[in-house]
Length: 107
Image (tube, rainbow, N blue to C red; front, side, top):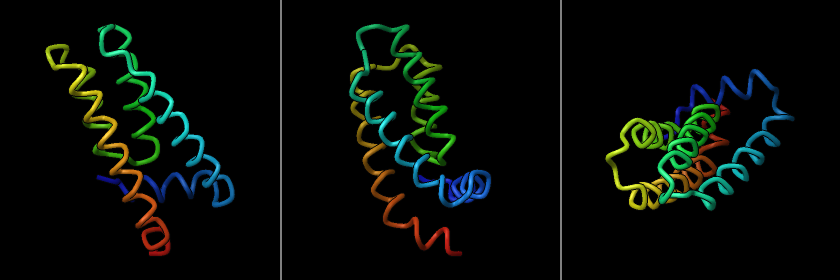
């Protein structure tokens, strides 16, 4: 669900002090994007999936990135169902991220 190698790589790239700020910014942006999903507008929804995919990849939220990539590339999927799945996977990923963060970065 979380690509911990990417998380460590990001922390090493930007430094520990800025890492917390980037995480907070990521979580706020993704939360806003999920809250503003427009399943009824196919083009906007595809663009939103692309944005979420990129954001998720940057912070190592691999399961979320995969789900968004699938939705972005497959217009035949039910956008309403996908939007609900995206919200669920994001919540699960966020919980796992914070539950394991200290241990994973200490290793």
